[in-house]
Length: 206
Image (cartoon, rainbow, N blue to C red):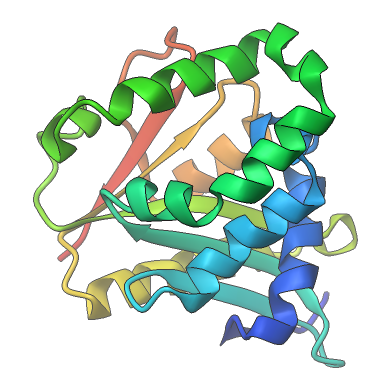
């Protein structure tokens, strides 16, 4: 059993966390854009005062897992900060426009720029405010199945409570079965229809 400690992510940990994200979300939208974008994506959570960025480190202080999140509405600031590496990544990979999942994500992001914060959280309106969004979580393959993911998600919950959040939510693709099992084990519940292209889970906080 691997012995891990959960720490706040430092800038020195960003590259390791980005590498873990590339592994955890291989073949998914933001990893397809490339490592420079993923590094900028993770760095935003590490540097933002309102965000949560944690790493699970082993006895040698090597990150073997990470989790990042922020209050609902974080997307505007994140997208602005990561615009250049995102555009560069897409220009280098024009074939991405033929990826159905990538097109779906891009269309929804463009739509979100023209709606209010409340509309952006459509389907989340029943959750008590403020709501913290768990945006990304990943564990190195060598550390999987040893409780690292559960430790990360429960520590994330503790930080959300310290931030006076009343609820948490996350989104996940239906085929990410291991992640969905982790969320259920941690007490999260499915919010929307199981047949939708993107599933939402939530957890109410005391």
